[in-house]
Image 1 (cartoon, one colour):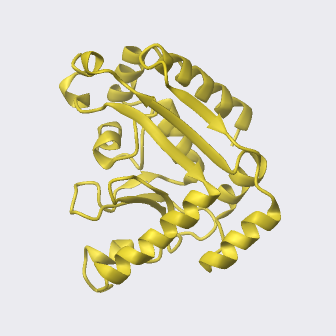
Image 2 (cartoon, helix red, strand yellow):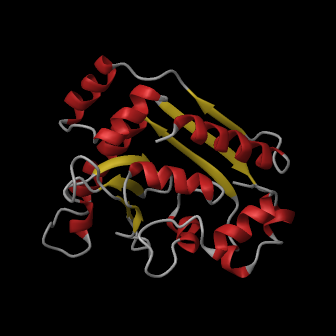
Length: 218
């Protein structure tokens, strides 16, 4: 990932949101150390995929964006984007560990039948972040341990369950920012995943429309 370009995009996006929400912010922490990552991997019992590990080592061990759109702005959104209200998410080393524990708890308590079509989507993943509503965004390490696709895990049968959000971690995070950082619930991201697309598409019509509405230029 081009971290300088990514950082500039996040700054520009936050400036756009600040015009709608004076409490909008974008923050990063210091990069993680190799010891911090190894300790987290040992506690989880799994190695981080290369791209995620490099993100924490080279960029930041915690990355966060938070912005809320006022009701009067949300009411101007076209029907295809109606319901978007915030750009709020965190990617962090501690968040991965917390979210992975949650994923395992969901399997133990609710999705314990790996032969079931719905339940099996929760298996052989590494949680990336907890959405906040009980759902989880995860890396499909069974598909590719080194550079896995990003998928959505729903706990309540939402339409996003099992949907691929990005071909890998880097493309998911970059494309999420490029569409305007629309939030991490499935219904916030699905408008930016056209039929036939593998993951969020920053060149789709909804992405172009949303960027124009918030004044975000790539």
